[in-house]
Length: 589
Image (tube, rainbow, N blue to C red; front, side, top):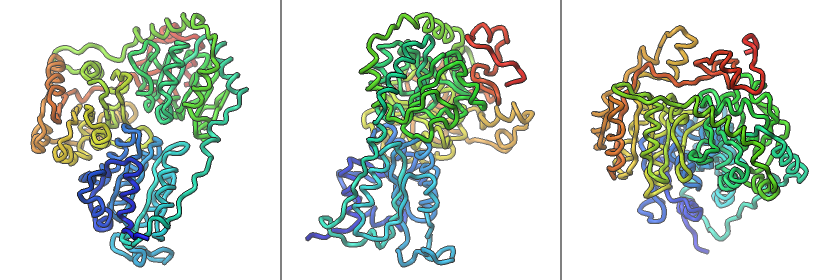
């Protein structure tokens, strides 16, 4: 029976799972795995310049390509540097496999009451268990097939998420006999998510048919279950308005008349008014967290019956109690609904559709910029016109994220990638790198603020080295704008560390040092011409947008207010005129 090195087996396994790229930073404890990647033609090692960025790149690869992303790091600091990216994958349900090197098993402390035995030894498995679906230290070479198969299965099954395999050096270099390795037998628990009672489906359909003000709220779980086509079929049949959470933004095409924007704390006012006035909310694959519902979830859609569908039963009735909670895969659920919802009368909600379209016209997300002042939402509107078909937009965390989410128009074949639960600044550039390798030939855009851009700025070298045609757009307001806005509202404009103590370099010079073409816009009337240059350039490019440090994300929901009552506040008379249900008295907000 032919023997082979275990690290070679690991790489062969990744190839068998159609993994094309492994994002890594070299280190002594993964040298066997790196050697097994050397000059392979069926899989490529992508050398990043920070392990956090490698984790974000794997996340971007998975989010945009549909396959599992893989990142690899050495023991100790290499492994711990992955943690932020692992957490992001866990909170946003992104299937990724993280492989860490570890000291030889005979150098590992196990249960010894010491802090460390081997150099750079760190018990990464126990560190990441709360933020992974599965994490294991591999100590038996003959179980490598079992652990790999189990890890890949768990990462993609049910509610997806990250897994971690910690591989000691002596395990990596061990000789194994592949044909004698035991496999992992997958459980059939996935089927449990598809066993939806037919009576519940009837109840849902009746609720939809009897509703006069329905709305569909989509979250990140919709795309994770590949339910976009079934949703589109459902909306074409019913013409029910659609709103999204931040993570659901690219789950439904924005050029449809049915799409009415993003809800929540920084949501579009017209989207929040739509969900606030609904008498039925069909929530699909969303956690209904407080950034969607406000800090008093009981005030959210308080006049509506809520049907909440999610693959994770623990998310049902967690924040906002549902009238009909359904633990089910979204794609399967919508397939059943589409088969059984014949005879729906769209005319019944015609007045409702006209009303919510009126909200969108009355409260647009931007005003037209002219002269020297560049209004960020207006810029995002213009950017929408230049986004190529099937492009992937990776957006960082901060004010730039909210301006993009409020105004970018994402069409059917385009993608919008950003972080929700972990919300790590500095993620967009690295995610764009991962997305670029997962989508060869597509235009990838990375949008960032000046603060977040500096956190992983070293990955500009990765973009240059691999000749990736990533378009980088930096909104520079020379401060940490989102926290500054918070300080202005709640800390009497004491801008500690957001303005006082913060600084940024001359980005034009810095990016030029990485041999990437640069442009800069200081005036609104230069936007279109410069965007044309950026996208006509086949190489990577960097565009800096100079905006005022006083620019805010508006509208914004304050603490204890219902979602329909955002700043800048409407007069009580105007708010009443927009509402089907009673507005809450001031003392109850």
